[in-house]
Structure formats: structure tokens, C-alpha cells
Image (cartoon, rainbow, N blue to C red; front, top):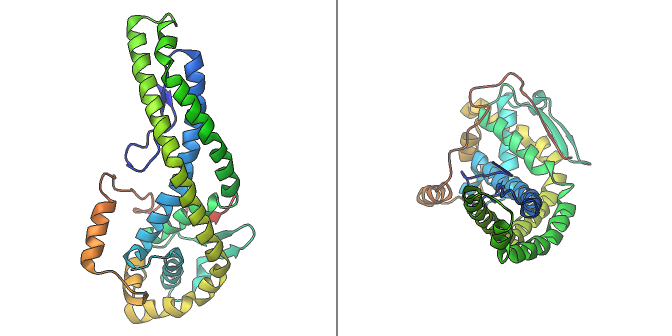
Length: 283
């Protein structure tokens, strides 16, 4: 029994699951630490995993200089091609402040639909991320220092708690695991904040350009449909993305490394879904 998220299928994830020791002083801290680590993991996943997924879906991770705006470009081209070169038929609506876009993905290829979901996750925390970075950043030294103090005294606290031998042994083991996860999480925090800040900077550059990307999408979407009869993001990337690309050998080797230790991601849209209305909105 514990609290937090395990996230054991992703080697980059922050392990926030805490195990109870039945010693209230320790468990109160571990609960606070779990909430802190969950916040770190949510930020990491939003700005690392989601960006990686969007690059993978748009195949822009195959560019020599991957830029997220190119993944957005391929996405809007695909939306247009899905509607035979008329992106307005996607029921697409975009607002700048706060950033939001609504697009009907119900009849589209599941990878295009997955991209719209990833877009939602990415900009979902856009407006609140700067304050969240400050909030979590202030907690890092507090949590780390408290964990350091407890690491020298938790065995004594457990010994004096009146637990039976079995519970005592389990509590000591659980506290050790918890403290290791807290220390690891605090150690990863600076890099998580750095990645989040880089993502925010990139998004600030991309968001004002989205209306132009939408307005220009039919130029490629119409050709993709009429000339090549394609609409999948992978095919459109191959035919119409002109930025310098990596060699097939480079792509193969990089994908092999990036997927090492990770479970394949399952799409809830691969076999279709009843409701195709996907709203991408900051909140």
C-alpha cells in the first residue's frame, strides 16, 4: 500500500510512490514528498514525454535539426489532406489567449488524433508552468534537507514505535526505498525545470505562428490528397517535409536507443472511438 505513481515503464520517470511505515511522523513526510514528486513527474511528462511523442508522430525526430514547429506543420497538413485539401472541414477553431484549438479528429488517422491529444497535454500546463516551476523549485531544498535528516534517524524512530518484528522490518525497508526515491527525484529536478523552461520558450515562439500554419495548410494538404492520395502524417512528412533529414541508419539507431527500456505506447484511438471531438486547450 502506498501513494504516488510508480511509472515503472519509463526509465526517465520520477518514481513518486511511497510506502507506509506505520510511523506517523515518517508517513506524514513521505506523503508530502509523494505530492512533490508527483508534481515533478507531471511536469517532466508534460514537457519531455509529450514533446518526444509529437516529434515521433510527426516524424520530425528524423530531421537533422528537429523543431517542434515542424511537427505542428505536418499535423496541419495532415488535417487538411484528411479533408481533401480543405482544412476548414475539420471544424478547426483556434484562439491565441489563452492558447486553444478545437479540431474534429473523429474520421482521421489515429496518429493524427493522437497528435491532437499530445498537443492538448503540452499546452494544457502552458499558462501555469512558470509559477509551478517556482513553486516546485522552492520545495526542492526543503524536501532534500528533510530527507537527509530522516535518513540518519528513521531506524531509531521505527525501533521506538512499538511495531511488531514483521512490521518493523517492513517499515525500515519501506523508508529506505522512499528516501532513495526522494533523493533521486530532487537530483533530477534541475534538469526537469530546464527542459520545462526550454519547452515554454519554444511554445511561446510557436503559438503566435499557428494561425499562419493553419492558413497555409491547404497548399500542401490539397496536393497530398490529389497528387499522392496520402493523408497519414508519416507519408506527408516523407513527401513534403523539405528540411534536411537524417540518414535511415541514423534514424533506425536513434529509435532503437530511445525505445530501450520503454513499453510500447498504446493509442486509445488506434481502433477508433465513439467521440471524435478533441479539444486542445490551455488551462
